[in-house]
Amino acid sequence: MNTLNYTIANNLIEADGRYLSTQELQPLEQYIRSYNARLEAYQQIQQHSDKVVLQALRKFALAYPDIIQKHGPRCKYDMTEVLRYIALSILRDDEIFFKERMMSWLDTILLAHKRNSSCATAYQYLKEAIDANLPSSSITLVHPYLESVMLCLNSHA
Image 1 (tube, helix red, strand yellow):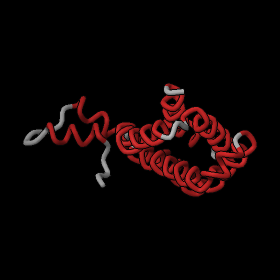
Image 2 (tube, rainbow, N blue to C red):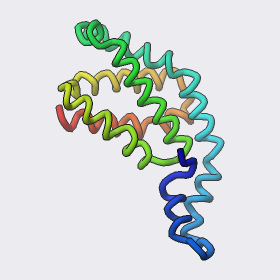
Image 3 (tube, one colour):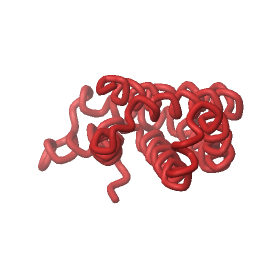
Image 4 (cartoon, rainbow, N blue to C red):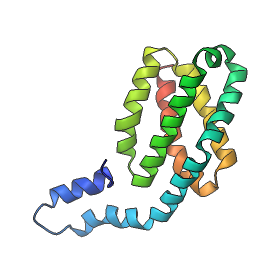
């Protein structure tokens, strides 16, 4: 897996045989400046992933007990994978990675199973669990990804 984000990797490819311009260096400088915060968010998600997913699913089970009864393990797997890809995307500082690797898959699967509306609720509960368990610096980095998941899910509801 590439470790650089899409923008930096693209700038390096485009610069083949020449030095990067000041404008092309800006994403790299931002990447380096924000690394510690992104690493901390990655570690927080890694450390609290199981806890926040279970918290969200417990709350979701109160609203949709039939879905949890039939698909609980799959819901847990999917939410855990979404969080894992959010963490990787934060570490890479790369929303394109998240959209290409996770969102296309998630949207296709949930749309095919007609679960978008209920899953949007589950991800709202996941967002609430994250808000309750992660430090604010990490929450700030996680929210845009969760909001894009919920926006996508709600667009088909």
